[in-house]
Length: 464
Image (cartoon, rainbow, N blue to C red; front, side, top):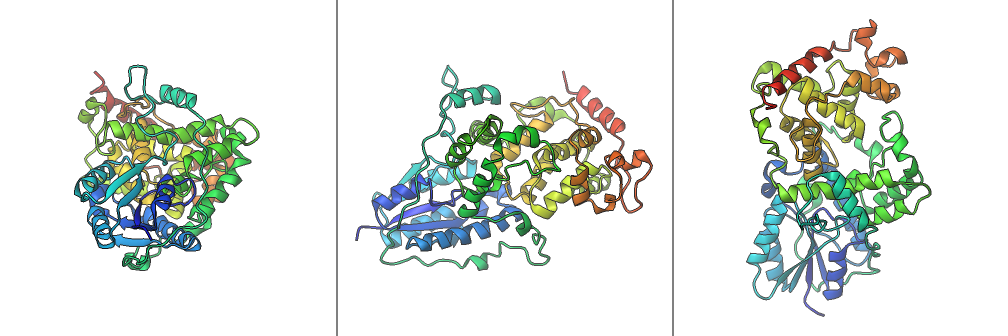
């Protein structure tokens, strides 16, 4: 038997359309390894909701590997040290992995390559995006900063390569490395189990991800009409499956493109993932630092103030007195996910109604979302805040009460804010104004007009 080959897994937890696995399986017996490295990511170590998903995704992947004659090796700690130790102990000649573009993973890849001895090489492959980030460039050869021209250029290079099948079997090494027990990592919440409702919406794993793709395929042509209606199930709900790499974007593209009807609007959303990675490649600190320097001078309200912290807490837990915002924030807590339109409304409310720094909201979403993605999360928050390289203008302030009525959110509000279940449709978007606010539902934390004027006044000081 030839020397074993290590397959380093991160956010690519699948067997199908997995170029690193395919290359490793051709090279020799494969040792699949996942290392839980929390220190390297710093303040962007996985949040609670993502850890719940990770537990179930790793369990599913291990079962899939065992069906192929293999298994998953788990280690916790520094990924470079863990991988080099396994390589040395078992005589591995190669480590295969898909490229990742978060700054901590780029650093880890560089360190690993430098620390491997001459008998072992790191082999990196592309496969987590439609095109390798950085490969879609302007006429001058530079990276795109604005989404629309990026999408037009990317579209010219589509469709992506056909997805490759999972191997029928995977050769095992003569000796397996020691492995942690997944349950010992304690990724699942217990005291209390705040994720008890997650399973009502989610089934992590590759098989479930592919099932979800095929289910959404028949609805994808209606995506443009239904995606903004939170009371309807118009979202693909593929974001966590894509984030953890349980399905590849190439697989999703081909399945959706071949569906009946025009699915262009959804394909543009899929391309947004690629765009976000291109942004963080150019600006690695995008999750912490705004692109537009003038916003460094914006007078955000002091987060050390007990009043501001109390208002932030009310936003986090859906007690703002704005039904669409409260429904969204409670959905986030209950299911670890937020409808895209409501995700924007809630973020805008924090930034412009409460005038709280977007980075505080980014941290909360990061901890609560099962699909928390460094690129997407940062790009979306900076788009809303007006601080991003491609962003909405700060003075464009979403009116949550108007948005709620416009996008027919009555049923959605009742699903997540039971205090309002008996309020009629024509009043549920603003029960306080309609004079029928239930006693157990809070008053508005601030009036819309007052909040808008305060935000515009803060912007006026820095706009020039």
